[in-house]
Length: 274
Ligand SMILES: Nc1ncnc2c1ncn2[C@@H]1O[C@H](COP(=O)(O)OP(=O)(O)OP(=O)(O)O)[C@@H](O)[C@H]1O
Image (cartoon, rainbow, N blue to C red; front, top):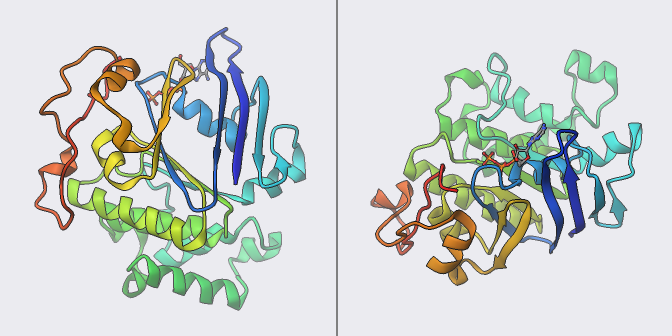
């Protein structure tokens, strides 16, 4: 369970990027974080993993308040948070297996990480994860030999190898084609459900988020202006979040696909809308 209470961030420049943001995410729930450019989505994710120092408020992961942690305690807490990135952040010249095992680096002693000698159970687990994400046959390939969708699957397996209690996912489909985007969103929601993992997915493609996620949180100018089930996101709310626009007829790139899902979403705010 992730509990965020009155989280506020004012940068040294004087920009207040988050204002008293408050919400909880129970086990297994995947929440889409939506909002226009500059709304504070990245700042929120970075405050949770403490790449940005919150100015006020609390971020509790289970029983631990992450905000006051420093040094070794902070490094330990970060192990509990898996990250998935838009551009995958793989080590291109390493194999798929080595990339997945790198998710264990926070757990093995320095000498083991230096020589990349991982315990047998980490390796067995990595094979299981590669099987889960459909990449078992590619374990020994170099990461740079994979397609974008396959790379993102490696990114998901690496994050899971960390055995996290929370997933933070930053624009996971922004570099992918529509069909692959759907497959990746489906995989993320499935693995979170299987493991009871709470997750936040920073996502610009609102219809894709509506299709796959349990709940959406809309940020505008650092404040939560929507927090509800995706089907409650009507045109008026979209206008409140993104500004005036004709939402009818717009659709996700992913909806242009003859997919294996029943397609219904209707709206897609432009990335630059404000
Ligand atoms: N390092 C920083 N120093 C000062 N201000 C910052 C910094 N990072 C972000 N901001 C400001 O904080 C606000 C929120 O930015 P943030 O990057 O969190 O928005 P975002 O919703 O993630 O945008 P995008 O969708 O474009 O990534 C903006 O006004 C931005 O200019």
